[in-house]
Image 1 (spheres, helix red, strand yellow):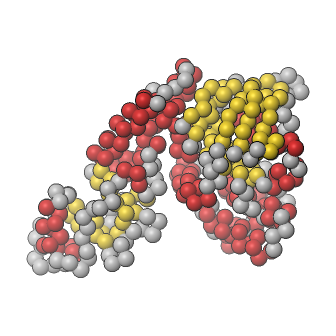
Image 2 (cartoon, helix red, strand yellow):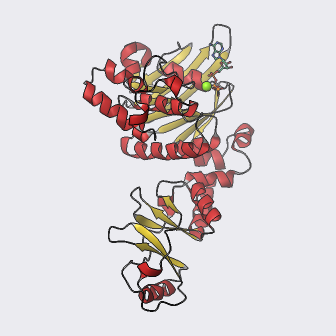
Image 3 (cartoon, helix red, strand yellow):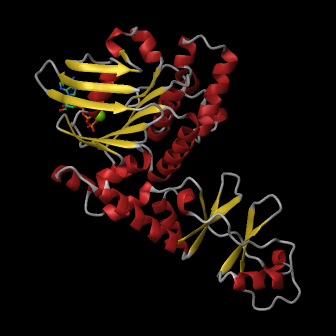
Length: 371
Ligand SMILES: Nc1ncnc2c1ncn2[C@@H]1O[C@H](COP(=O)(O)OP(=O)(O)OP(=O)(O)O)[C@@H](O)[C@H]1O
Ligand SMILES: [Mg+2]
């Protein structure tokens, strides 16, 4: 657990960057520091790993005061993705990612394996990138290497300062998704800085909204959206809170997992009868391994054919971890009333309908208002 107690920073020139901030981050949680430029997010972060000295108050990491911990030990146990990336220019991508593993004396083979694994995760083929230098990468690629480096030695605590800020929207959504997926498994304790409310809602178990060095509200995303503490929060959250609420839910939480399907080798007539009985407009066609291989729509004539002979290609799908606004955007652009949901191996996991989305939104709006 990380505890900030009445944390304060006054820079030598008199700037009061952080004022009396108290908050706790539980182990395994993602705490998002959110707020306008200059509100003190980076300053707060850098006091945790002692890149800058504290002016007042204390920081405890698992009950130990960070100023009483060995400084090198402290930094090695905390992964840090710096806002302006900060890769070492004279070192290759691989060497950058291996920085902390080297300090921790990991054997060479394990380090290389780790660097490759992390590059893969960031969508940067290791063969192509591991030997490049930072100057040979685009800004977004550099930033992804920065994130990989922060995860390098698998630290329990991560400080990430706008880690996806320089990455294009499509890659960013993918990386956010990947990140949440790893977080589900690894359960790291993470402090994540952003000034993007959408990103905060999507990534944060809790959001600390700051303004002019002060903590204005600390709560879960639904509380910020539906129970803003004051006018500043209300303005920051914006009028379209219903839309933002879409990010609070992942598809897997509201999809129907028992969905009628068709098999490629069955008679089209049988599939059509099932479709009518279930009142569906179409059926997903699923092979023996559970993978989605096609779309079965109402046939003109079945003429004793099999499903495989008359099915069309699989529809647009969403993965179980995607959030609702991504699902809705797919449904609207594809003109779909029902969206097929798949896992990362393209196996059909369920279906999502507009009706289910409507019900879920009404529910979270109600919960937020009740809190
Ligand atoms: N070394 C410094 N000396 C004096 N003032 C500083 C210093 N570093 C930051 N500040 C000031 O402290 C305040 C908080 O800065 P900080 O970098 O923490 O903001 P931030 O919330 O991370 O902003 P951004 O979203 O733009 O990154 C700002 O007013 C900034 O100008
Ligand atoms: Mg900053």
